[in-house]
Image 1: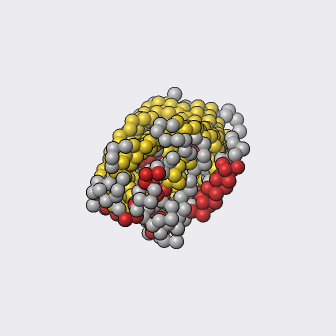
Image 2 (image 1 turned 45 degrees about the vertical axis):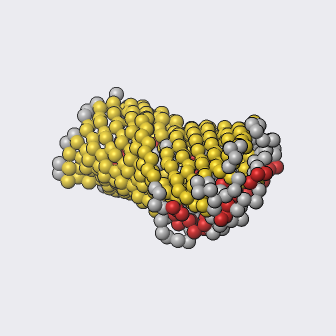
Image 3 (image 1 turned 90 degrees about the vertical axis):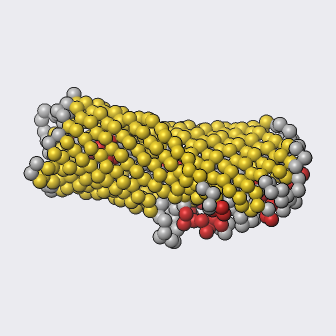
Length: 493
């Protein structure tokens, strides 16, 4: 029989030494599987949630409109653009005419990957996706009396996280996937994998998104204080396929020849959140803004499966397939955003500069694996996993800066961001990643066009499996660069 204690786990480069020394225990998955027997008698497989899942749905990078993307997402003290609804809903009070906008997007992702023990054997995978990052409308009303200048209602749909990625790692290293399994075919009992270098390859393909439907209201009081609130309905869609192979290419081992494994995961879900914020405009030309984003309370269903096949030197094989479904709840962290902006007027050139500071505590993320299950194993595993999250993740402070220059009908924009890693560590090295963006725009009386390009890169560690009680975890390094082109068309009515 084959019994698996499998997981795919990501970690940043500054945790490599921790992983290599086996001080970081990677959680295994609760038993929720319906097994289909092929050649072996029935075994069980553990599959479930990890810290990687927690970050997948909590680390958001809203794309919004091309105008907001062009200034690096730094827009929290500004207004008058629908893209601000993912930052500070108070900015929606800055509309004085109703508006409809949509934003097609092209995303290009390039990932370079290599096995750390065989770093000369690197591969690069590219993936291009077309989609819609934003479609929204704001409906403006102008109160006829009192000090309220606007009372605006908004409905919008936008992408807040892009989960598309593909990479391959291949190389030779000591050890075998079998060392992470509780049960393996009898024929390989006692095989000295720790003394053998096996050729390994894994192909990973991920696709999906986190998007959000927003309903909001914002108003401007005496043209000095804008306030806003919104209700969000986030949607999760994620698919992952993995193909892993290892082979005794140099015939170092008796009996064992090759191991093949395929995994798939389909996750989908929905939830609810809210945002509230203000912008104070009473000290010209300054603007000061702040917003609070509640956690997203998500219900997620995972359909998953895997197949294993061992091939022996005499040509015989042992194989097993399994699949299953598991449903759970997950809560993302609170988010607090503070903003300061300045409007400037340099004769024919006008514009603004804005800075956003964002605070999140990823250690407050929380799984409820007993929400739809009464099994003690699920509840206990959920407690252990939340303890791991509280220990390994921490709070972050992200900084975004952006500026826009306007000359007649034309606009030019620049932006940058410094984003902190969600992993807690005593080391300062490798904790931050940077984003860069620029954009252009054209404004007419009743319509406008914007174009932007944003680029970011980050390094992660990837572990195909976690062997028990050994010190040769197969750690791969992935270096991902993502470029996003956005085109926004807006119409006023």
